[in-house]
Length: 205
Image 1 (tube, rainbow, N blue to C red):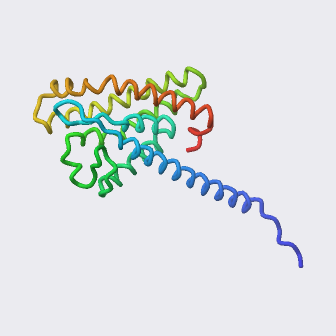
Image 2 (image 1 turned 60 degrees about the vertical axis):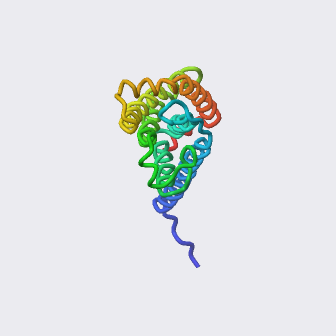
Image 3 (image 1 turned 180 degrees about the vertical axis):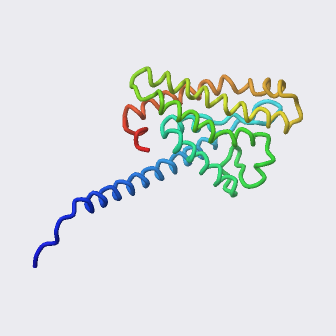
């Protein structure tokens, strides 16, 4: 029996399909891992100040997801975390979850998280492909922008929910700044280490 003729185009299509399937599986795995990390980091919650908004490791995980996974996958990881929490799983700070979360003073911060992850990831993708200390500096700058996004959305909602002016809300939020600075630096250090270990991670999009 004669062997079937080899079709290079069909072989190339099969290879491309296999690579596409693998890439999609990797993306889903990374997005799920980012969402799980955010859920774990939400377990640490220490209430601060009269507003009752706690100090958590959530912003650390959000900035890390954006810096490591990039804009699209980082934002999707945070959106997955929010979807599961709003659906009822108690994975938000202080064991919160479900529709009741929409009444909490911290709702604005939660809604800002995917935007912050996207902004952080977009800056790192654009300027952070060089190695060494330059990448760490870029990640710190990207995380700073991401943190400002969180404040820009979270503080007005906090102020409205507790019935104070925006200026008073900024004063309340100021209590979190030293802790947020530490989390930002920690996220930059971890993200830089991850990119050193997996230098093609950002290009795998």
